[in-house]
Image (tube, rainbow, N blue to C red; front, side):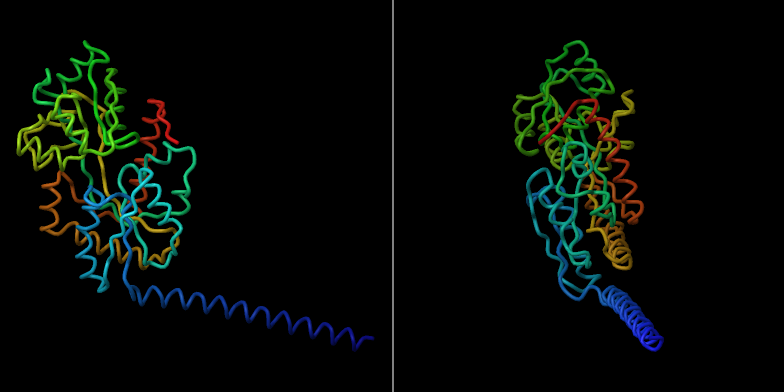
Length: 338
């Protein structure tokens, strides 16, 4: 009986030892494979998801990065446009992608606002996605039609106070940075303007030039061309902390006595959560080198964009701050989207 018990104990001990050894070996194997994967990265083409149609600010920023990344990483970088749902479709696909360092994305300010705009998202920004690099920030420009009865942002606010509800402002769509920044302007100044949402910035700008709406806050690129260079609209203010190098004569809102009104579109490089830190840091550094290069800086300044190139931690902190900021504006304005 005693011998049988001893044999049973020895068998259990042997089984436990084998199990422990196999578990330890598996853990070492996975860890070694993880390290080897990061060391060999990239070994194949990299996919860069843009959750908008070609031609817009997000797409422009992705394609500005593309050749520099290919040169530095030694692999093709494929821009994959996945428009729809105010960026939700493309970001959702990114969140579901393997965290192997071969799928990244570029998002703009709507990404931060979506957390509060929609009751339910197909991803959790805090759990499923991580920042890689903040690429650039474009403070919005305020433009008015040539025949508008105000010549500056300060005059616009005064006119709106004495003519409540008579001014229509356009935006590139519900929940866009143009919409939310205009609502922030209303909130901070106590004025009343009517929102006219469009399917994109181009039709909104066309109606501004045609006099169908009176005000448009939007990304600088098109407004600089139509206003600063062609004179088809009047630029009256910058919703940022400093003037834009491309239109240095246009003062900020703060310079005109309008405090607390800042809004921008910005571009950030993001990744599925769990991508090895070595890969994230390497890609972030490559993006920063591209963004801060003299040629890219000149291009960005022409677009009304300030180059950034921030670290992953700084990018996460920036997006978190933007998410909190727009959550309060959305709450104050009572905006909800399905």
